[in-house]
Picture 1 (tube, rainbow, N blue to C red):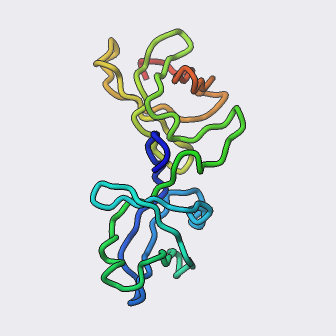
Picture 2 (picture 1 turned 30 degrees about the vertical axis):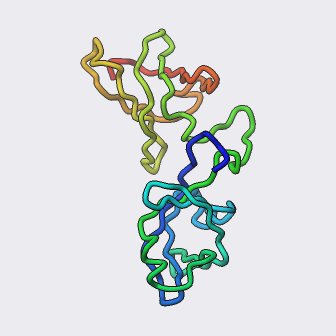
Picture 3 (picture 1 turned 90 degrees about the vertical axis):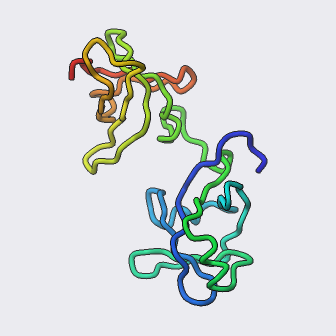
Length: 176
């Protein structure tokens, strides 16, 4: 792997499909087929990342299946079950200045408009209506909160995202 940054996880290999080495693919991309926009993939086997090339893919019902270079038998495919699929960060599309990937928000400090430090973004939860920042307080704060869930609604609750400073400014009452 050429990058010192951690790979970006895009999905996971499911079970084998058929007898010719095809694999069921679970994708974390916005569209199911979006994972196939990236090549090569990195797959994590026994704690180590290695590059693989997708030879072919197709929809199988609502799911997708793929054939990887060098995987031609059911046994080879089964050996890859549950392996994570990733790409190097430099393979990701460059975004405009006011946009960012969710992964870039993890670890950002969250501060409200009154200067109160709410904690650090631990993860982002998809709820259907809008995504939510799960913010863990640095220690149990004066409001008795160890965690907060803040809706990621720009211009309403999210005032500014400063990735260079690793900080998110929110309009959110620490008591809520």
